[in-house]
Length: 467
Ligand code: HEM
Image 1: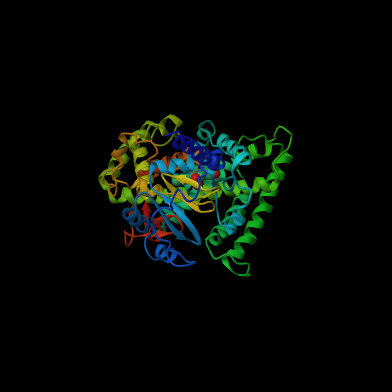
Image 2: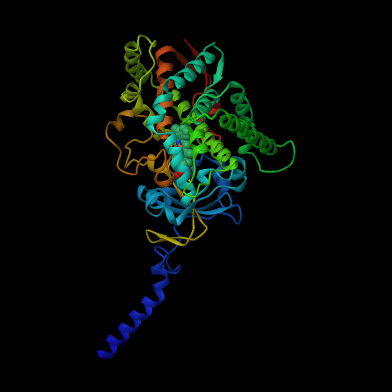
């Protein structure tokens, strides 16, 4: 009996000793104890990339979840990955254990946007930049932009209303770019605005093309345009400094920054973060706006109800003679629910990427160091347990707040979108002006999705607008 208890003690002591290094490193676990999640890794090298690209990515991931459950593995785009399709899994990666995962982007994309842009970073540099972005996009700052945003919306709408067919997505991109410029520079002279727009357009075209330095290719042209953007930004910064303008916009915040050692940001750091914010702001907002117009067009009853809500505000403002107030933009309940439901339905950011910096255990499964981890927003937004009849567009579901961590169109945790308030504000403003003054008709095939890389209606929703 005694010998048995001594042996048990020795075994316990030895096993504690052996597991000590793992216990010390929280969540680092001996590989042999946890197993990899279920799922298939596909073919050597290519993995399941071909399957992903030859079918609708949403169907690809939804089918995998059905087969394997909420944690599964795959091998796509040259990387072994673990997908987490539950609210708890997404929260684990993005919030509670965010320190075990780092942001990860292909080097070619990092180079194009600028390696000092905040979303490539973690830790002190990231939180410093994030504070600057957040304070320049705080409700206090963006409420002052309402009149300028209205002018941008009205002039965009007027340019669409000559009766010719436009690509809604294409036009929405111009609108969200102009609002992005407004939030970064406040008022910017038209010469610099056009130069930024022309060169940014080339960068945008090359961003998703094959990365090569061969002259004449879209990627190479984009790299050259990215260099020119730096020169233009440098000119703008120089003028600002000469005029000693103490603006409180994003550029002003970047220029005025000094850390406790008195160090300021370099011009490259400033440029990369300006391009980074433009990049984060443009396609996202434009895709959501395009979906909203499609959903409203497909449900005329809902469109009439949104119109009634907006007409009341329009009349109160002397038929649009007075500008919208901040309070009015905060009191458009139906329109706001349409935005939330569109964000859920379209889930334009279907998932995000992180990389495990150590071996991590989640729910008994091993996520090996170096593997990519994908919190699957779209799968969560389309789970009938959280959103009954998920394929039906029903804004009334947002009359009740969704369960915690089940609705993450703007992400979660330290990298969650700092632009979510301005995005919603510009969408509300554009909808106000569209539905109170314009009608639109979708032209051609009305179904189908294309990816570029965010999902948008086929051909960017060709449509005709008139007063
Ligand atoms: C409807 C439009 C938008 C959607 C759906 C959206 C969504 C998101 C999501 C999901 C993330 C987190 C990505 C991740 O965790 O990997 C993010 C990050 C970010 N967004 Fe947005 N966004 C939108 C508009 C904007 C706008 C208008 C701005 C700026 C004016 C902006 C600036 C940013 C920035 C700077 C980040 C990186 C934050 C960081 O890494 O700390 N976004 N966005």
